[in-house]
Length: 210
Image 1 (cartoon, rainbow, N blue to C red):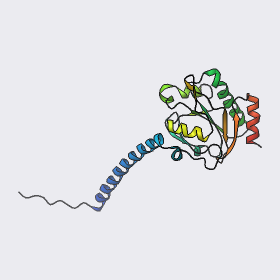
Image 2 (image 1 turned 90 degrees about the vertical axis):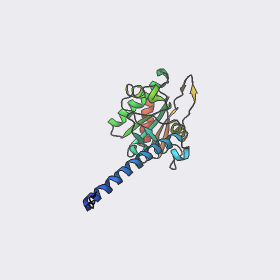
Image 3 (image 1 turned 30 degrees about the vertical axis):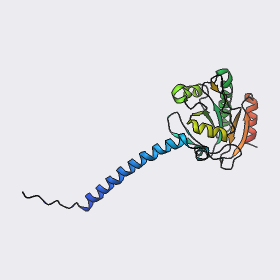
Image 4 (image 1 turned 60 degrees about the vertical axis):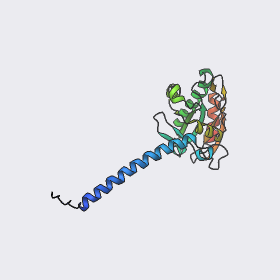
């Protein structure tokens, strides 16, 4: 039985075939890198997760938004970043007053023309599954960005930002200070969360407009 000779592929078809192979390879590589990045962020040591970048307090980080996208300190360049750590399980009478004061003062500073970004990071790594972090923050501080992270990142980040990671009565105690980073990502101040709204406003105003 005679067989037909295969016709050689045209240059255009060869290019398309090669392109398909490259796309498939990139997809596989991207999937592997994505998993690797997730595993790395969940299991790497502090040195691989965060860096002070020369700051005595604070530095870079990688947390997740409520939508699941990655948020880094670079997202806040050009704005005064105010970082606070709190557990969504913290009783309202203990943590809500500070959260509401932070949000209110941020609004007032915005009204004066200052770019201020309050970021509240959950101390509970299981918050996306066991607590409604978004409601906890947004229902009481709608101008504040809530975020969560892996346990490894929380441990590294609280160490970097000089915040405690101490459990008490079933929840992690809130950080006693708001950490302020300037628009260039440099440490500016640590402001006590216990200040009343007017005192907090004066203190942050002095930091932002010295």
